[in-house]
Image (cartoon, rainbow, N blue to C red; front, side):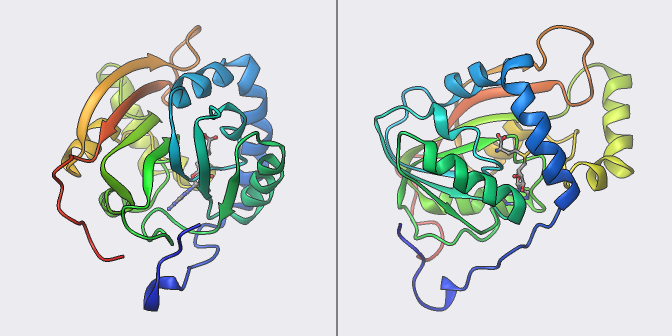
Length: 233
Ligand SMILES: C[S@@+](CC[C@H](N)C(=O)[O-])C[C@H]1O[C@@H](n2cnc3c(N)ncnc32)[C@H](O)[C@@H]1O
């Protein structure tokens, strides 16, 4: 794995500490693989990737089983200690080499332009500083490299959006490991200077009543080919 050199090799550990959320996410996310069709979503998200990939906020590592053999190496960043331990177990079972590393999206402990692709799944809702995290993604991705994203965010009609905002301001982030429901992942990627490729809005779960967390989007974005070096290495 290519770590950052010099002063910036110091990696902040456990910047995210949500032990209760971690325990419940570990259970709920595994059930959602089959019950909510998440395994299929993960397969579609990762299909066709190749080269060196960095996955941000890898959680308990449920994506690892779905990477194609064309991926040569995955660096999986996970700041939450309990989820990271589960990700390490998942990495041992994976068909592609996975290096699970502590760290946060806002200060990635890796060199600039070291990756062909970045994977984001259900993580932009939780990072503390979205613009800073996306600036870091742009730094570590090579020019022309791609971002694969599957995120939830704002959606629905007026009442749903008001509900999402009210929950974001009150109970939801402390209950759900810092998650927010009313963010706009596509807008944030565009504002951070990525070129948006095709993306598709979808509800998860696909059937049944829409919940405030149901409004999802899956797609691809690119770091522009002519993008000048973003930040130091
Ligand atoms: C809802 S879980 C999603 C986990 C996994 N990506 C998945 O698809 O199942 C959100 C994840 O983001 C991680 N996270 C929270 N804040 C983060 C940050 N600042 N940088 C990187 N990951 C973060 C959490 O620890 C958690 O693993």
